[in-house]
Image 1 (cartoon, rainbow, N blue to C red):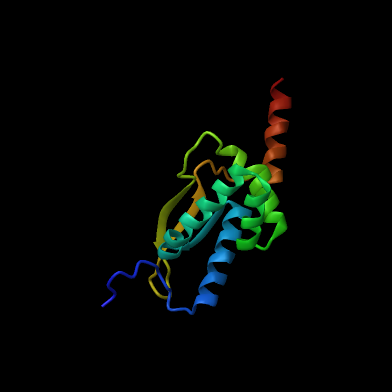
Image 2 (cartoon, rainbow, N blue to C red):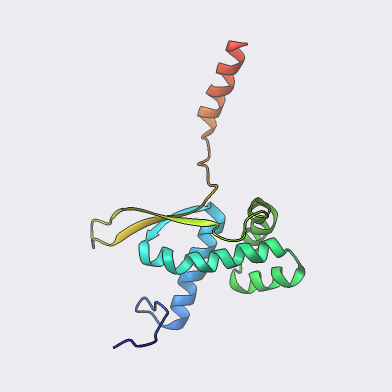
Length: 138
C-alpha cells in the first residue's frame, strides 16, 4: 500500500525522474506548448508555474534558483524577458492542461500543456498573404 506517498515516481530512479522533469520544464518554457502524457503534464505543471513565479520576481537570487533547476541560459533569458512579464497581473494559474487523445501503442492518455495566453505562431507564407490582402484592399 502507498500510504502517505504524495509524489509520482514514474517507475524511475530519482536522477532519471529529475532529468525528465527538467527536460519537460525546458520544453514548455521554450515552445510554450507541448504534448505529453496526462500524468506527466500534471506533475510538471506546478514546477513550471514556480519557474514563472521566479521570473516575475526577477532578482538575481531568482535567476540563480532558476538556473539551478534549468541549465539552459537561453530558456532562462526567455523566461525572465518574455514569459514572466506577460503574467505580472496574475497570481498563478499560468498553464492549462487540455486532454487530447489516447496514444495508439499503449493507450496512454495524452494532453497538451500550454500557457493560458498561447497563440500559435503564424507561418511566414500565411503572414505574407495577409499583408498582401491588406495592401490590395487599400
